Image: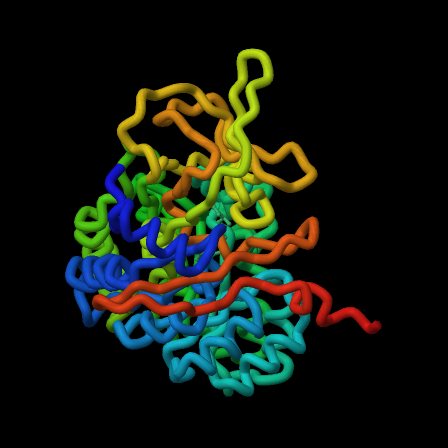
Length: 402
Ligand code: LLP
């Protein structure tokens, strides 16, 4: 896999800012968004960046300036979106299992809301009636996604209101004369097969007649990107072509223009990001050679949590003869980034760079073992800037009442 930055550039950053360090390419984010924008019909498709993937204000502002909307999964993300300068009509709050107070707070921001439970739908209807248009998050009963933990649309999933509860939904909607503006599904993350998106869209198409004020169908996020050297992502051109057909079918059935919304997270920010780490120790234990780095699942949890593969490059000795290494962290846990991975010979002091670290990397990091969260750097249009500093001991203790 080819990195977006040269080894020399990574090394310079490591020396200047220290390691571990997250680095992002803003140009790659722009390239990904522009590819979406150019592939889909502008009048019929809107994109909302699922900012749970990476919420730094500089990233949000960059994405705002590209013209993309933003999808939030908590009221605080919505406040961050407002701070980053998104206007309310470009902010979407797709809720899941939240207290009604958060929905009220979202209403006072004037943003789009997707409601995901009968009880909140009832409360919404009772309080706002027809006055605040909302979307309904449905569970499409489709199993898809990179692994079970990131599959959200199947029949055992907590997300959304199950399709088979449509009668209960309609009773609430009719009782309160609610204005249902959109229907929403999110089937999972890392869905390569375009058919899965279309299967979900077809389930929504079947519901159009029930909701006379619908103006958008939100198909969620989950476009796959390549994590392994031999992988490819969702075929965006095919997705765009098929979306156009289903959008036309929906508009025809509704008798008015229906927009399609998507909420990409990984697609926009996964490949733009890297985690640069430093090798502290090499340990040979029997047949295993451990390379112990200055990071851990406190900084990049995906390998441990989802058994996710992250490509690793030894930028210090990229051409050395290869050996098998188990890459481990420095926290007090069985903490592996990769096991028996073939990599160019690693020496203490080398830098190892992890790929696809932009989405759900820093964002899912913690200060476990009282180890500082890494700093973050953004490179965009030829300029490199620090966008968050490394945590200090004082930061780690600042909530404690001493
Ligand atoms: N929309 C909704 C309602 C979602 O729940 C999600 C992700 C997205 C959009 C964006 O999905 P994406 O395009 O990024 O696949 N931490 C996991 C991924 C969890 C995704 C949760 N929901 C990971 O690192 O693989």
